[in-house]
Image 1 (tube, one colour):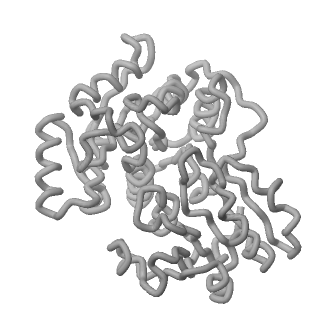
Image 2 (image 1 turned 135 degrees about the horizontal axis):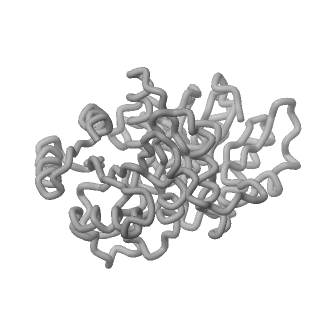
Length: 346
């Protein structure tokens, strides 16, 4: 949507130190754009590394005004608030950015072209509403099952378990190896980073599997397709995993799990995450539907060990590898080699 030379500032007010800032975290790790700063007044004057320990020397500023003065050209909403709605408290800072010539990348459900379009006055300035779906999608008919390739769905025990990060790390590693690999973005971060994809949670339920199927078929020439996961079969508020399974007809699954968590994230933290070996069997059973659909095999576990010390992380990796009998790693801490090998061994 925007030239990758354009300089980003990432709006993360009140979210730099918590899971609702996952859009910002993804951009810091993967964006091709230069990033001028993060905006979060709670940590103004620090770097991201000083503030929250992530390995980025990006300055944190206290206001949009300072980000504009620093030469930022695009402001990105780096926060994923509950429900994906744009809070009215953001009206003033975002209006200021637009009035001062910045473009906007919006990953929330609200149509901000409608809300702020009248403030666009400069040539080349724009608002990209990332979660705006196509007017309609076909109904899925399991066409992806006929493809002669590996379709790997990143499937999670919970929201924000590392599905997008693990998938993108695997995609980058396979590209580096010279493999003909595709990536299907299905959420706001993946779409923003790749410049294409399907905003799955904004698509009508009846068309969601068809949207996934269409996106997978568009990459039929790839020997491996990584499909970005969403939600979890364990989460009572999630409807995203089933259309991903049905639309992609995955040949393989990689389970993504936040190692420190025994229960789902708030507000459903009263629900216990099932034992991973049992949950793996559930995902495979749902995917194959007693043999009626593509046989699906889980080939590895991508652990998110954030918050754990190195020794604790190693212990968790060993524990889960023994429980599941599968290659297990944290792709951020330890790289992707274990999971890349698993792809070619299955």
